[in-house]
Amino acid sequence: MQQEWPEGIAADPDEARARYQYDIREARGAARQVLRADLGDAHLGVGLTALVAVAVGYFRGLRSGAVVPAVFLALFCVLLAGRFAAGARGRDLVRRSYLLTFGWAQWF
Image (cartoon, rainbow, N blue to C red; front, side, top):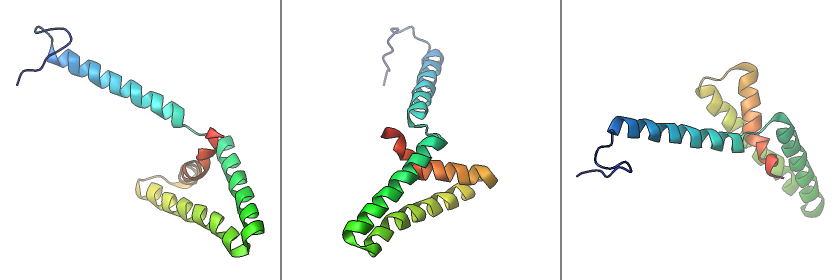
């Protein structure tokens, strides 16, 4: 099977591969920038979670309201264990797990 390169038949496969890897790095870097959350976003996520828990607790009952923070606590613990297994320790472990759990608030 012969590959067709944008440069034609005289294309250098090593240069094409280097361009491809560069483009992939750039695309991943751009995605990281878009998905990056900071502590302010995570704090907003905690506040919104608490607000939703209070609202659900008020309208549906205390047990139903307790489910919301329990789900986020379970998610935090799972992420904490996963980051620990990946080698994160100390403050970095807690910070990254916190950002992964509550950083979704950056889209509000």
